[in-house]
Amino acid sequence: MEKPLAAGAPSAPGQAEKPFEKEDMDVTGLEAINAHNGWAMAAVGTTIVFCGLVILSFAISQIGRIVSYFEKQQPADTPEEPVFPTPSVSPGTFAVPEKYLDDPAEAAVYYQPLANQLGETFPLTELYQLCEANKFPSVHLCIRRLREAGILVAEGNGFFRWVQPS
Image: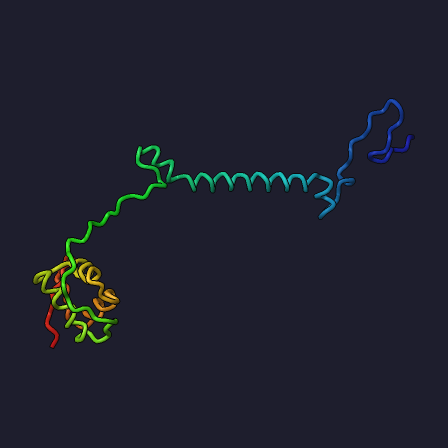
């Protein structure tokens, strides 16, 4: 009887070559990666994912232009007009403090003439605009102190009332 040839060994003339058997490919780790083109597959996969992420980030960055194109609006690069109206109050001749006043009673002396000009109830935004137009220092802080002290009292719907400090 003829001796069987080892897997992968050259066959006798006229015989077909035997394919590799499972025992011959029993490799693990880095050897398996090398044997089955794992490095090339990893490189191609990484490249595909990276290209997809680049395309996705570019598409997201252009959403504003795409939307404005379909809505036939002005381009995203041109500034839009402000939504808020211009102040309806104009500066007058008021005593302006030189620095931020931490004491609400002291600040009330300077802010009361402004509040009186606006009427009995007024939107807080108008008081703020009038203070800014007259170049009052630290307007947000002073108005907050006046509200905390109970001098500016909320009436509802964004309107406030001036209450004399006691």
